[in-house]
Amino acid sequence: MAMVSTTSSLATVTLPNYRRVNRYKRFRVAMAFASAGKETASVGVSVTEGEGKLPKLVLTSAHGSEAEIYLYGGCITSWKVAKDKDLLFVRPDAVFNKKKPISGGIPHCFPQFGPGPMQQHGFARNMDWSVAESQSEDGNPIVTLELKDDPYSRSMWDFSFQALYKINLREKSLSTELVISNTDTKPFSFNTALHTYFRASVTAASVRGLNGCKTLNKDPDPKNPLEGKEERGIVTFPGFVDCIYLDAPAEVILDNGLGDSISIQNTNWSDAVLWNPYLQMEACYKDFVCVENAKIGNLQLEPQQSWVAKQILSIA
Ligand SMILES: O=P(O)(O)OC[C@H]1O[C@@H](O)[C@H](O)[C@@H](O)[C@@H]1O
Image 1 (cartoon, rainbow, N blue to C red):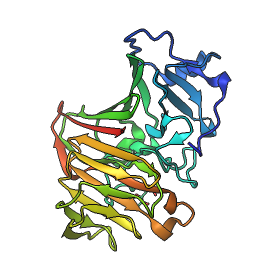
Image 2: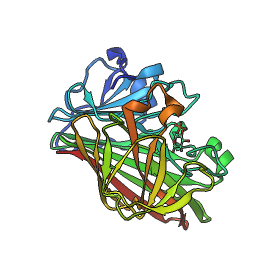
Image 3: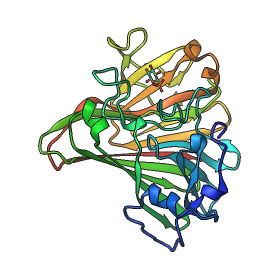
Image 4: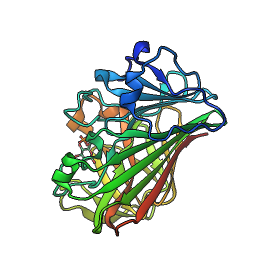
């Protein structure tokens, strides 16, 4: 991807010796950096230094696909099925200094999609996730990231929780499974989204599969969305778009206008959101569209309960 280009081989750590299935439970990046080696993995998961010297995981499959993930925000910033062709997009105004969430790729919105009482899109996208597990199956790397409450999250949302985010890179797909668990002694509620930025040509991009969905249009007032129904079989991005689709189907298809048809499948992400900022982001709006899997209504979890949702991005 364009924005994340610096990789220091000195700071590269290879998670050692992948066998068919290799597990490294509770692997911490701090430890990885402490024992930094010089080898770069050809297949698997390696820890490198990304933009702003932030720890970045590089996933490389035996089939030539690649993905990059920043532990800051648990943010997947790059997904390539062919060399030099990134299907995700990072905004040119993205910063990698932890002062702001990374604007692009697949940021988490948790525990609030927003707008709401908390900061926009919650706090999961500006906290450090850790590597809980890393493995490889048939040449396909799989990594699980973990996020837990800390004093920063507690200052906004006073609950004990665990988020596990399993990312699986295959030849033509990138799938994620998010598990949110209530580790507190009292119930909590949340809403959430994967705010995926796809590289696109906005004038040619379109989304299929949303016809008939109930919509909540956040344009013009995000705090008072207008109810409606999607009547179009093919939804385009002719101007500013910020629209929630309730009870969205298990699959929508994005034509990115650059020659790629991307299937966006989900389990349990009940809703979808389309967003393009148009002239609010004049420098880059033509180069991406956001197609987001979301859970817009509040979900309540009792102590010890978990919620699981999967997203599979794939290309023919
Ligand atoms: O700019 P951010 O915080 O990364 O979020 C991206 C956008 O996400 C959209 O969902 C919001 O409606 C926008 O207001 C926001 O700008």
